[in-house]
Length: 125
Image 1: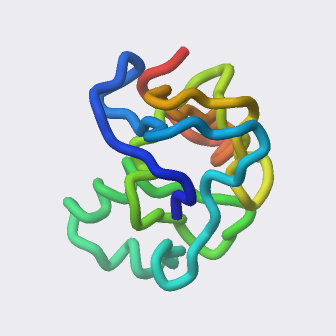
Image 2 (image 1 turned 60 degrees about the horizontal axis):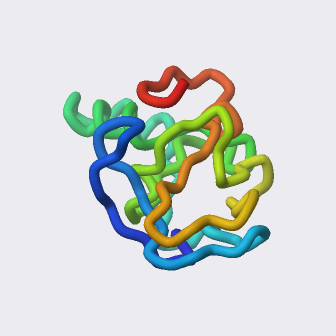
């Protein structure tokens, strides 16, 4: 669950992006797993879903070493965070943390490879 105010808008990186609604100080936890809201979807459940639901999960959910029993799906607009090779969010720990000060209206970015080393992505470099 995002712990800082954000909004979704057009992205210069790819499609839509998630933007900081106010400044975020370096070291701030910006996302933390919220049981009951964020979900870890077991593989057997994914296999039982219709094709359009599996396609949604293929795009917005991912495997995570921190949540190893399925696909992690955030309930909020986290799914609009785009990839960057020099991101402003660190996802190398269980919480996502601002790597540096992030200005209001700046797009939030992460390195998808920190989330899932196997990931194929669009946008970013």
